[in-house]
Image (cartoon, rainbow, N blue to C red; front, side, top):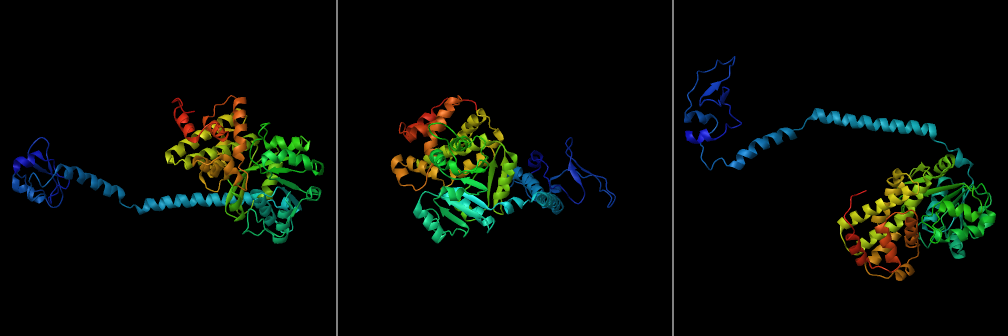
Length: 454
């Protein structure tokens, strides 16, 4: 027994009424000095002495694993022991930080809570009767009951439905529109004395639509563009299409973008968006017009960044849908979207956009919503392509426009113009042109050179 004890390390609980420890240089037990009671005389090291901490010791009673676990468990117990004082301190820090944020918010709102613009606004016209145009018309109308909101449409039956039933039965059959929303096909009447114009016509049809109503548009009427995409043949963005189609290079222009589904706006769910304009005063005026308790509006002067991100995210959403339709898994989805974000950033910055815009609400925020949520029209197109359906069959079965389909080709032409390589978005364009199958596209993308991430 004594021989076995000599091979064992001193146990951590060595404490036998008087403080003893095993000397490293001798085989005797020594006593620490103590006031009371007086220390006993030195004891000779014999097996019975060990009974104070170990009754019996055998080769099987203390395993190597037990000797390793015991000190560790003691340390863990000590580490995990609740420290109420430190927890209270942490809670206090969080509370103070939150109170500071609330005070700052209240102070800022008291200084900047301007409602005079909304009070001065009497009429807003919305061009187009799609889902998002309808949702924004309802949103603005709810902001002020006396505000006249006119929707300029081409479909007489839809006009009749909105005016008689206060409902856009094509897109929101279960949602009632405010009474101050009126639909019309008369461009002159709709635009007369309007204070703001919300443009919600799809990009590919915007130029011809605007040219048809240009004579009724006041040169000072601010246009708030809700449309996202690039014109296929000209590669123009809405900031270029609107003033050129109206024949007025100085037409006030502001862009509204960000992660926003029309259905959730109709349901008044919390949403955040961005208005971008080179005219800072116009951006703030639009912010005052649109911001509400359930819609946050940030401002930006980076029109190019907001516009390019809003256009290209639709193409990337088709790619994400293809991955989903092919059941390629979550790893490939994350890799593809990350690569697509980089491609959008490469092109946007070459065109003069700020990188921070691409990683912000109108960039990454909009990309995440469009790529990962089933409500996305462009993602739906991709899912069906990945499942093996033909593009023509997909488009003919949809009652809404998926801008990414027509934008894809324009994106690649723009990338060539600025000498930017965009493998993921180029693959989408080739799939849409029926020059590449989704399976072949995946194989080619996975075979690209292994390069440094940029």
